[in-house]
Amino acid sequence: MPLHRGYEGQECSVAGTLALVGERWTLLVIRELMLGVHRFDDLQRDLGIARNILQDRLERLAEAQLISRRTYQPHPPRYEYRLTERGLDLWPVIVALMQWGDRHLSWPDGPPVTLEHRDCGGELDGHLCCERCGARLGPRDVWAQPGAGTAADHPLRRRAARP
Amino acid sequence: MPLHRGYEGQECSVAGTLALVGERWTLLVIRELMLGVHRFDDLQRDLGIARNILQDRLERLAEAQLISRRTYQPHPPRYEYRLTERGLDLWPVIVALMQWGDRHLSWPDGPPVTLEHRDCGGELDGHLCCERCGARLGPRDVWAQPGAGTAADHPLRRRAARP
Image (cartoon, rainbow over all chains, first blue to last red; front, top):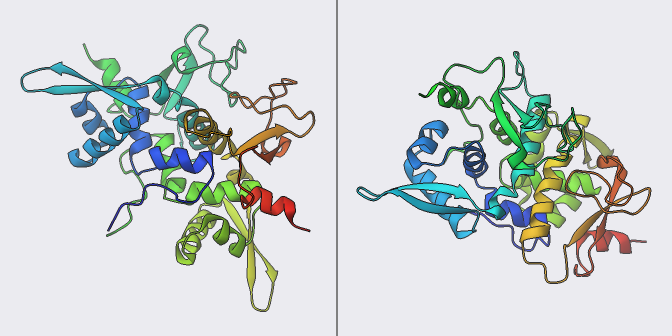
């Protein structure tokens, strides 16, 4: 069964973007990179996906110049992945998906993650502004905090608990 | 080959939202509904997809309460589809995907579609505000205009040319 990734005949920026990042798992890989997870093994563990699928998604993201790869250990070779500026520009996509889910999915103890303005602690609003100070925010202006109801093994809590 | 639509074990609003709308074509169906295309045959023609796939996506969107179905012709039965408020709340996702593509994909004659503030004609900026008057905008405050370089058979131009 061939994978159809693009949308031929669509003269549309939505379709063009989805042709690059609309594959299953791809936007979650980008989410992880935005949360500061950069190494293959960490990505694989957080996402819980097959290594060959993760490898495929990373290769395609690199082809699309959305991420870059860097060796962090030569023997055996181990790589880490970073979003390029072009990749980081997908931040509003991730935020919009997250905010929809925060609002409309059932989270009895509140959303799993909140995005806070680093400078003042205000939450990111639906216009990518700080709800407290009104500043227009970008991906480097916020940090992700685990919500009140997130499990102890949530990736953000695991990372916070690391020595 | 089973379709894997959800992301088990992910305590994440991004993953939860993608479980509902991350399937191939689904976000383009939502784009069409936002552009004012509501009838099955029109959706099918604009998207150029198989009828059974469109049917599947519409059924799943209805199950997720993102769209509602209405009969507009009883014999033979013909249906039109409208976004619910819950579905309309996906507007920032569509806009974010579009704005990324406008910026980063190659559109020699400019982006295919621009979103303009109905009240003053200003363009929608990256914070879902009007770049001219600064108003915070939502899906009912903007209209979509075909860009300078869009082909004559672009759906927006076809609709504008209709008697």
